[in-house]
Amino acid sequence: MSFTEGKTVRKRPKYLQIIDYIKEKIGNGEWPIGSKIPSQRTLAKHFEVNRSTVITALEELTADGLIEGRMGKGTVVINNTWTLLAKNSSPDWDQYVNSGIQQPSRRIVQEINTSESNPELIQLSKGELSNEIFPLAVMKDIMGKVSQNIEAFGYEEPKGYLPLREALSGYLRTIGIQASPSSILIVSGALQALQLISMGLLQRGSTVFLDQPSYLYSLHVFQSAGMNLTGLPMDKEGLLPNHIHMTKGERGRAILYTNPCFHNPTGILMSERRREEILTASEKNQLPIIEDDIYRELWIDNIPPAPIKTMDKNGHVLYLGSLSKTLSPGLRIGWMVGPEPVIERLSDIKMQTDYGSSSLSQRVAAEWLISGEYQQHLDYVRHQLKMRRRHVTIALETYMKNAAQWSIPEGGFFIWLKIIPSISMKLLYKKALAKGILLNLGSIYAQEKGNYIRLSYAYASLEDLQKGIYELGLIIGELASR
Image 1 (tube, rainbow, N blue to C red):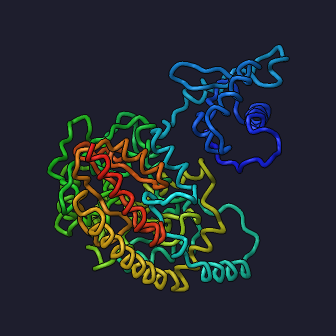
Image 2: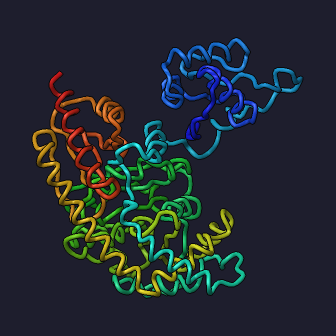
Image 3: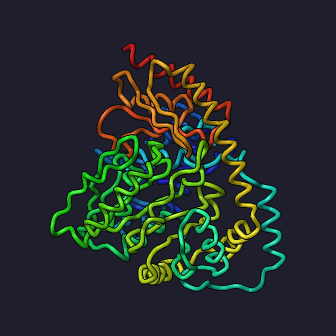
């Protein structure tokens, strides 16, 4: 349940403010019967009071018959201000929520997603570019240009705005991918592409082979569709394809997902040789590949090896790209490249789900590509990431040399930290959060061995990056000395 509204400023005693707040939420139907209210700690923090004040408020609401503490569930709403007098009860929304097909995110992932909107925290977890890097002036110019030339527009054709697909066709040629506009589908970010694949190409019980660790483990896009994730080990060159072992029943019911450029969360850049080996294994096993290449343009030292898709002559690879990591996640513009029958199928499903990505965002994205501003912006982004990576590397050497091990990534957003002392990672997470530092633990990504943290150097300010790493070093030292 979200709890992000601003604090109410009143002269009434704090415990009465809490009562009014909760009653308003319940009375408006925002917190229906069966829903769990925020914890005492969260309420105390929100209203800047001691937990005893919160307890006083909750006791009065309990006496009024509105809430009830339940073992293992926390405090839940059992009535509202009008059903206390009504003869008919409201629907049991809790039953509906728990029976939905889409699995909820893990609790820690939900907490991180909520905390990432808190500007007071040092965001060492956030996988997006800093606001300081956002090209605000150019974006205003491009939006102004688009608005001056705009005409009445409605739903786009199923595959997306044609000028954008034409511009992407030209852009993809620069990285070696030959794709006509008819084999490109515009999606609302690469995540939607994965959702469309899960709905349109795979059946329940299918197997998704993937890197382990992987960002996909922090989502439930495939699991919610009834599919099984099978993790494959990695080395410094990327996913190891010789670990793909398919049963007879899996043929035609499996797909391989990999993130070859500046892998999330490890930052590994897959070698050219490994890309060739993966495609060979794919063709041998008749195993389609999802190549998630959203970090490709974030190279710092050298241009990465060509995408797997460039070697694909038989239509084995579905190639994903996006503007979310390089330009703006708010545009919600990504793309998928694949065989035309597949793109036709998935474009039909996309029309069934949202009738197409934003027409305005697609026009803005097209102008970025056509004008040449996108390539200039990428040059600036790479320069900024190089400076940030150096800044963080110095901070790690200064404050974490004896606490962690790491490799310097050749691009992307992330440094994969292995914590050397044997400490509780959950306790590390909690203590860091109490110090105003948000972390992503390796366990989120199914890192089963060792203690790992995914550290992002892309979002927080340089000052916050140094402060966060300094504090992290102190916390690890404290925990290790116990």
